[in-house]
Image 1 (cartoon, one colour):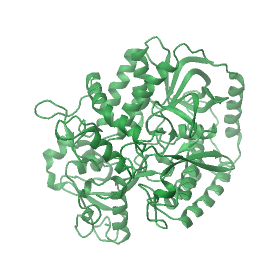
Image 2 (image 1 turned 120 degrees about the vertical axis):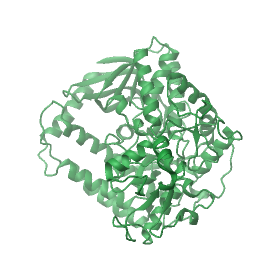
Image 3 (image 1 turned 90 degrees about the horizontal axis):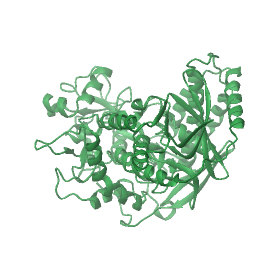
Image 4 (image 1 turned 135 degrees about the horizontal axis):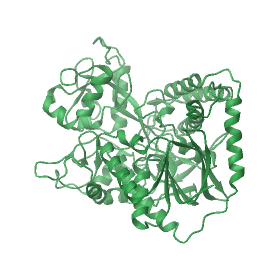
Length: 575
């Protein structure tokens, strides 16, 4: 058994920022960070557009209160406003701290950090490093972890969270290189495992975004919060699904349909292309439904619309958004200086997640916490995004709540002893689980079941939802759960056995997907990213509350928790 004071699972921005804060507060603590990829290959590295903060470098009249209002309005009033206040008040401080750590932000001519417009924000408050902001931040954080001597377990897959008697005590993990199993005991466990985009068949997320931390939490008997709220980013590159950053529209790109019309004037006339993501995604979906989408040969009636940058000019495109140009050219052969980019909505972000308080402590119910268990970043739900996240608030959440959770952990473990843990029982159980997968003489290949599941979620729980469609999806999921019991692995070895990891990740996807669909089926309203065609209106009387979903193999049980409202009363959401 391996012992550490603190174990953080996840090597992205939230996990790294938490580890750095713990090390800064108490350098004597033994901190471990576990990641199933190398930390600088975490999905945070793909974040492009920027990080929001009221630095007032471009718009002097901006304030944290305005940032908070934009965030709450963008959330369709489901965000917890105490958490939003912390997010927006601490934003300038954490950005300056990142600069001092060495992050190379883009600059104004006078040397101050540059700030650009982003969807749903009333002012230009998004700080950026061209269109590679996540890359710039994550690299500096990982370098600082090396300096502080944080132990990195890279390319280890965590199989299980160990919770006994309401206390998180450790994890079970598997080394990809050689199949070695290890039990890790710690005074505090933190999950920063990111999102679950691979639940769907088209996503901007990388292949590692399989919801493992969410699934492990659910399988430990703990709830997940607001999982029905799945963000579709409006501008996924067609047909591959990777992200064309909101920074492109922030710099002035247009969305146009088959008629050459800037159609956002019909949906959000005051904000146009910089409306919040849920509104823009639905607008694109409606244009395509109405036959104003575009075919690859230019005819009307196709599956995408155009993102047009041509009026921006080569110099601006190559200096401000070079990575987006590169992606379009590399993946679909489009030179965005000369040609419009084909786009359609793609699954992007999880507003829901592991329920936590503003110190990152995980909830076991609406009014009770789990001892020794913390979470932050996309895998957590604090909730600062509610039913819809504004662009450039996700990196901010990772850094603000990563830092805040790290500080809470450093104080929590002070003078605590390691918990009592019988490691051999968990080790034996993990060995048996893996051997059962290897011995399973099934008739289905992993990719068959995974593809069918992703297609099911995309068809039955997408941008638009109905009772009948989601009910059909639930029935299909029950069949696919049986198919999962009959998957076959061809690789029986221990050396870099990717089939074992794929089988375990598929289990995570199926747990998370069933929770998403159950929560969506039971929220009989439209709010933010959750758009019910059979319940088109928001219903504050019934559903101005958070969903808490408890998973078991027999099904998902739902409870509800009140929204914290401290500053802004809910009102109609117009742009």
